[in-house]
Image (cartoon, rainbow, N blue to C red; front, side):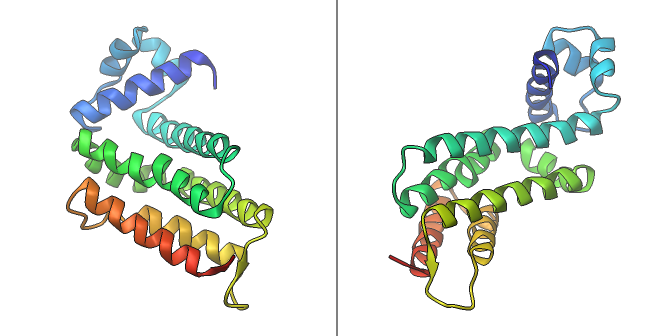
Length: 186
């Protein structure tokens, strides 16, 4: 994706967060990006295309940030905390800062289901690789690195449901981290 397309996506995310998807027009996105409406249409045929691309780019950005931060982390505990910081806690904070994003994200599941699934697979692959590099051994011989990766991803992603506050979210993620650390041998 080129710089102009990334600029359009960043602008679109801002506009979607402010007005919601249904009220946002391609003209709104063009204005926010500082480009002509036709430029937006040349890059993305529809708002749904923009949403799908935004999911893909945000997933790639988050994964890259986690990978970079993992380079200086030495323990599994630190790496779990880094994932929680750049993943679930950031996602939660974005919704807290822009309440309309909650509606946007719910709509994304329908529009961008394939991109969301690809993102999940990318996260799982990264976690499996991390467990292998850390030489993590599950305490239950029936568990695999893939099982641990699925647990880490799904508990982080779903911790937001029925959460009262950012502090409540942090507490849930702490419990998820403790549970994960108890599933592996030191």
